[in-house]
Length: 396
Image (cartoon, rainbow, N blue to C red; front, side, top):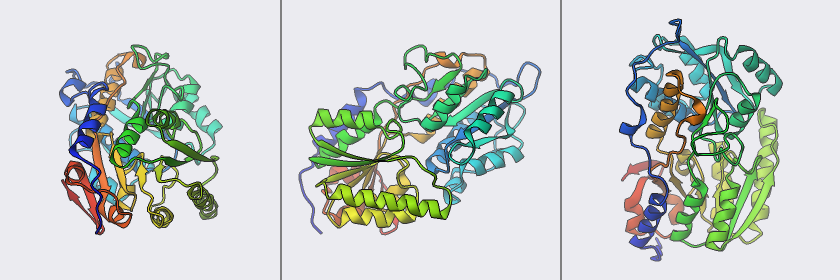
């Protein structure tokens, strides 16, 4: 076992400083003002539609905690959720599976999920989705909940007469979901959760542990979704070279389409490795299959190159080196639930606070670190939320 010793406790202090210079996270006590749960003026429940892009377990986890936030405040009947976070994780439940279960559950008198109002943009015809939402918004749909950038941009563009609440978009301002994080989003019916400059903060920390000269990034689809503006900003600020490849958005539904897509990913990995990179930043939605992830990561580890993550702790569990997660799922869920509650209570969505800076958590794959001789000082290990080793994990 070989360890380097070029990391000190100063590294941790640097990361903490990066975080506290940004607006502090909203505490749980500050989230929802006291308000009695209620239905609409006619006594019927508020009805929610949901728009996602495709199956993505982090979306399911965040949706669970939004629902838990609504339950915590009495808007969903206590104990009525038809799943737990453990069953979501263990069953790798998609948001569609969760939505279908919610349709069958008695959530109480205040909130329902509308029949036939769940949509995957990646698999369904966009024009059909637009027609359904436009026809039903304001009739039997009172609010549209959207996950991520693609869904947020799509629904915002429909200019529906009901509020939309977007969560987990990489950069809602740069992507045009909202115009500003100030007092007015630019549209009275649009709210989006904002986690400021996450890729920039992540890369500062990764660089502080083991500086890299040439960072490789492979982008799938929209560069804004993958945080490219922040990645480029960190390149200029820290002084490393950014080597970027792009893969155009395409169908990834059938086994044949997935094989073709992951062939393109592997070809891009082999090409970018030949560019002389000494670190790789795995951005969102590039590799969603955990089994394929392991074999693709081998290409990097055979050359001793660390693979850092932008999102998804499951990828660390399956071999990626490290994730600095600034997504405090429980309190982000409460924050998004608070926006839903305030809208149902009569507030204008576009004027609600939207910035939430999460407390950071560090996840490390110990086996991958040992394999590439990555520096593992006590200060790093002690700061980890979870360390994965030998197929198991240890909570610190």
